[in-house]
Length: 294
Length: 269
Image (cartoon, rainbow over all chains, first blue to last red; front, side, top):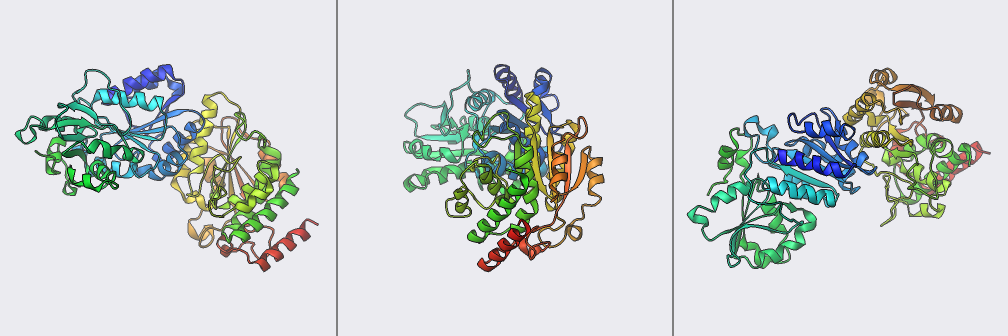
């Protein structure tokens, strides 16, 4: 995903001379193509995330579209108030980019586990969450965000994720993207982020025969009103995410049904259990420990 | 309008606004009244008729709680009618009790400390990269220098040679509960800032000549951001508010307001 991100960013920056990349002294072997091609629009802020996010907001207030790249919780929790007050409240075109969403950095320990980030970022009223499920959705998110500059959070996996689209899909905030399944199927797995691969795997299990699969790469507070209509024709929607259940994606979907409580029981949430917090191991192992199993 | 007249208006309007709204922070506003007056009468290249002019200088009040001083200056300079100040602190008002970018002439909302300098650094960097000539001014409080984000921004600004960035510390030596010295001592402040790579000048923050001379001659050293350490008196101009922590919080009663206004009239008679 990170390779798709940087390729797409370079390509978009070729056409738009206001696209800038700010990194928090991270991104070795990822960000070089941008840094070398656009040295005037590349800034390494050093290991100083509060200033990183504040200066990104300052640049955005002067017409730049700024991508702020770091890993795990560093560009979110470490500078949460700068995101809240400077970026989101002023509605500036800053995209916070975090690589290593979920438990992608499982062996690196709790500091590097991004399992509460949706909860933080979806609290911001103007924030669009972009959590693509595969490299093609990364490109789709990048194209959407550069055409619609706004406060946004791009949550990436790591590298080597499989692709589930043959071409870059057309996406809109809040609109489910069908990955697999016939029209008459009324049970679906709905995922956001890199758990698309996991959910796709589950489809071949007997337990999920007869399920469709949807991905929702763009969502957030403003996209809640679009959900009830999409839940309505479904008998069951099982959300899948590599984030704690509290404050996560499934929790967001259930909240969005506040005015249609008759649909609420159709949503079943598969998210990480808090017992995974503090454990270390490979992503696949930790996802299992956290409860993401068939 | 000259700076002496503008400073006088800032004190007058600030006292009235805070008293009417029952708001806090009058001591902080009086502390920066002369700095803000010099900025808006002598230094900032801004046009009240075109508040969004691309070539304007950018001013950021990082100590957002002292906003009445800036609202008063903006009204005094004609960014909006003086009558608009009556909305300060009222329900649904744009003139909220920490500075708001919804007010004409205000670049950035603050209120949480330690945000203005990093934001200003981003603006100054943008100005450089866009090869523009406008400058960025950020007014900070002394207590605010406790925030680590400011020291991150100080390092960044010096490293990137942002000589189009000017920061001013309102050094009145009082912070929220007691003196700066008894809270988290800043001294030796000037030496610290110089060690961080900034050009530093100290002035009496109520002496218009010193303020004007320093702020009109930036950058003081090539390739270095400029930091003005302005020695001030919290509550300056109203005898019973001067150097008193409680006037960070209290709002003047009608009687105290009358006394304060009488003192200001005498001092400017």
